[in-house]
Length: 218
Image 1: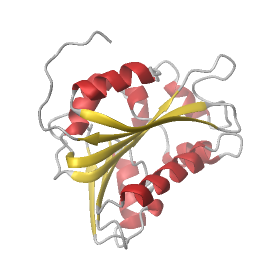
Image 2: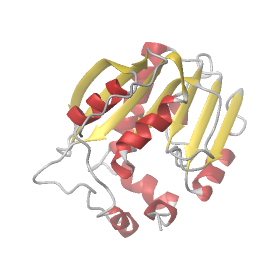
Image 3: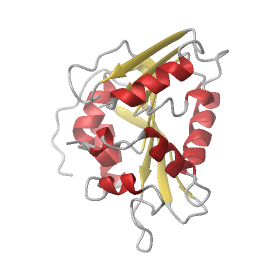
Image 4: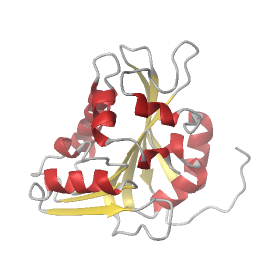
C-alpha cells in the first residue's frame, strides 16, 4: 500500500505548514517565482494534494491548470476548492508514471518533492511527455542532512508512514538523467530553510524532441 493513500490531507497540510518546517511556504515561493519568470499559460502540478500551489497561479497568466494526484480524497478536495477558480482545470487521479495518466502537454510542469517517492529515471521519462517543446520542468529535491531526519518530526504521526518509503535523490545523478532524456538545465541552485533542511532546485527545458538512448549508470 502506498502510504500517500493513508495520510489524511489535513495532517499533511498542517505538517508542511508548521513554522518549524515551513516547506509548504517554501514550495509556494518557488512556484510563484518560476511562474513569474517563464509566464506559462498552462501549468501541471504533479502531486497536487488538495490544490497545493494552485493559489500561486495568477489567472491573468495561467489559463489552464492540470493537477495530478494519486490520492482520490486529495483530488476531490482540490476540486471543491478550485473548480471555479481557473478558466480550465483538469484533475487527474492517477500515478503519473503509468500510461493511464495522460493529458495534453503544458508550458510548465512543477514537481516538488516528488522524485523522492518514485524511481526518478522512470519518473523523468514519464514527465517529459507532459511538457511542450520549449516548455519547462521545475523540480525541488530534498538533500540529506546528518542531523535532521528526512521526514521532519511533528505532532502528525500519520506522516511517519513515509519513513522507509522516502529515498533522497542525488542532484548530480538527477541532472545527468534529465540531460539524457532531452532536458537541458536552465538554472540549478540550493536553498536552506530555517529548519536547516537544504533543497536543490532545478529549472529544466525541453529543447530536444529526441529521446537519447545512451545508457548511463546511475
